[in-house]
Length: 324
Image 1 (cartoon, rainbow, N blue to C red):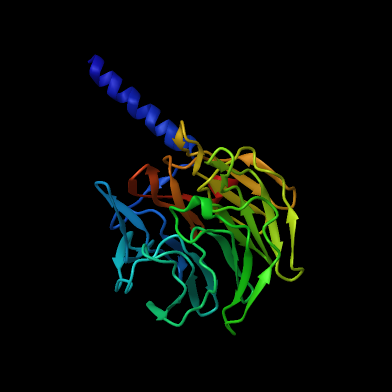
Image 2 (cartoon, rainbow, N blue to C red):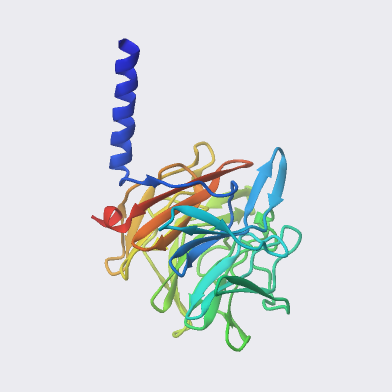
């Protein structure tokens, strides 16, 4: 009887915790444990492309292309990439998605992927002049804005402040004003209207020879060709994830706040007009995740939940539950 009561109590606590976390709904897992992947809404389905995972002490760079169908609640696997890809940037265009930057595991990826009508088309000619692995960025108008990053995800001392724009229509590139804060990588970025917003990230401290977390936040306008300050984040976070909820609100969650505690599930909503952060519904688990807005839901996908480990977990929550 005592054990039965204890089990019931645990179930009640678990249910209450899930309810207080905004009723995250558990979904079928990713086809493979994954982190560092590219993710986006693709015609109402959730795309997970490339990424990395670990088998024992060996890091694997992935070629998989997977789509989650919300109606059928299932994953579909498409033809794989011709080479692995992770830590890249993705942007949405009227005709599909573009993916650029990142790494193949052996070298920076300098070509371009176009995702059109269920196909992944590789443009092999070099696109990007500079390596941009784990960079911030996004598609603003017809330009892919690329900020910071490094030549190898393991080379944290190689983070840069450089910024440039690549025109997806003409192929032209232009140098932009450098990032106003320290050299950075593994940061959160999101495009809102005609600006790229960048939050947190990691930098390399040349004095201590250690990674330091950043709390700075800035917005770049390609039209004005200038940066502006946003309010600093409540804490420094690297490997943070960001997703736009509406024209004024951005959900920021997960990542690593300090090495002692490892990954976190903490989340905030940043309100652009008010330039403020408010505590929000935490993630359903602690990790460096992928976030996608699709069909009125925010999807929380896989990610690095601890060193040398990736999860295949997938959850979603209604946007209305995050902003109420």
